[in-house]
Length: 531
Ligand code: G4P
View (cartoon, rainbow, N blue to C red):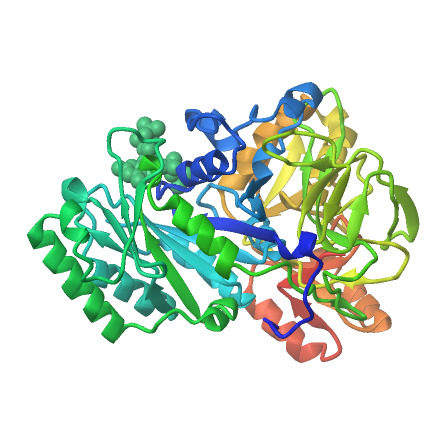
């Protein structure tokens, strides 16, 4: 991450665009809710939370959703905190790792990693962390649920260091834990933060100190806990690296805050940390050149497409991360893939407080563009220059099934539904070169179920999934005549994805190895760049 860049215009410099990564149940929803509470976006905690399925989609959070029948708000939320504008991008919550998650992380400049103080680094946290690492994303850590019996603080820090191979530096240090948890010593600002157990929405009492020996500490902390705190902080200072902002920005070091989201404790300190150490909007990789946020002209890219949840309308919302410039409503942008102009007349800014049409937005912001399917994941929008944002991959599915409409007369409808989901990135859809029907590929088994019920719900089309004779898919790359020759000789295995790209399907790794030997001009790839 390049930090020696020119100063950004103030409106851009104050933006912090990030995602929260965590294992289910660690407290992501609760933390989001408290962010919004402190961001002034909601009046009382509890508004984001709903039970069961509703909780997963959080579907009527925004009035606009009700009006338009779309469920988008949870995907991106913007709110102000102090001088900052935070753009929080949601990562899908279910445990099946999906491309969607990966692509979401291409749209942010930092991630907040939430871990449960009793459980430490769990499987999903680890996976998501590794995705962040691929992009060297800065990571700020929040160790939650300190009001419950948690692990020893040194042990938690060690575990993160060992499992994730990243330097950890304590930004705060917990005082007691479980029933004895009193609050934290704010190491960065030399303050004592005391939790209020009686009122969960109340901001903690904050006392400015003069070092760990400040006698005022004794007014609030029983002697045994105070002695332990002093010892531990001293030891931590000796054993652990001090906070190095540059190292945080490069993704080599993570500061850790301790707290209790449900008690609103430690959240403000974390938010301050995001403001201070979380990066400003970063340079975006693109070809033939990178895009810098301070460029006057607007450029952005689609990282997510969400179909209308209302079956009566087929509108979709494309989520666009602005990579540069100052966007104003009504602007005409060039859709680079088709080279066509697009008037962006009704963009949505997911302002949690105001819930309005986006009159303007700046580099770093996420805007939603309603459209009828022109915008696809990976598309770039510019003010005319033919730039293409790179680094938004599509992964080969790990599970394949063939799909059929319950009613054979509805095959055309099924095709339409499948194409929509393919464009949304919810599944890979392959049309075999020989024969009829479609093969659908996903990364996690749960996605078949989700897909089946969405096709039924949104298209009124019951479908059947059956085992496919294939288990792996690879995109075929190479000079056109080599690919053509390969295709003709392997027709039984060839299909086309929704972009018309050639895909080789097989059930044997052996086949893949053989092809690499027999067709040196052709490469089989498990990823392709979205375009
Ligand atoms: P997730 O989005 O990461 O899946 O987690 P979520 O925020 O839904 O939190 C999971 C559970 O942990 C919730 O309890 C929530 O209340 C609880 N929780 C979150 N933060 C804290 C904390 O700081 N301390 C304690 N003790 N608990 C916390 P639940 O029983 O599933 O839901 P609810 O009945 O509380 O609504």
